[in-house]
Amino acid sequence: MPEVTADVRIRALDELDLNGIVRIDEKITGIYRPDIWEQRVMFYTRRDPGASQVAESGGKVVGFMLGDCRAGEFGLEEPSGWIERFGIDPDHRGKDLGRRMFDAICAHFKAEGATSVRTLVDRTDEPVAGFLKAIGFGESPLAALERKL
Image 1 (cartoon, rainbow, N blue to C red):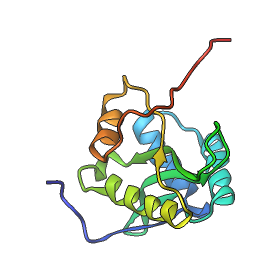
Image 2: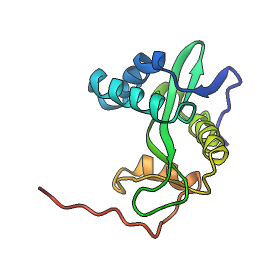
Image 3: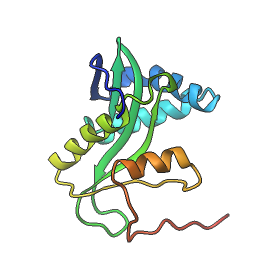
């Protein structure tokens, strides 16, 4: 059973969380990418305010989950929740933060009328694929297709 920490608050993403997300991404990837994250944070705070979530401990962002609720894409008329990116500071893993952020983002999706949540995963990324499987994701009738340019 993961350790659950009472001092962690799950809340909606806001623009001021950008530096925390950049810091987490740099710890995970070793790459400093503020421009990419500024674009993503601004996109999600405008597209679906309240959907994306952060985990905050001691006033510091220690996890994030970016997504939105949408309909009418890929031939899917019913609203669906979509999760694009997520990350947890390596020093704060094993505390059930991913599941708590997932529960919060799903509550938002349900309130928007979604009956499913979707994402894409690189199956060779075993930690991410394993996390998604652990929170209930499974195979979908939709297929991700790719063509090299």
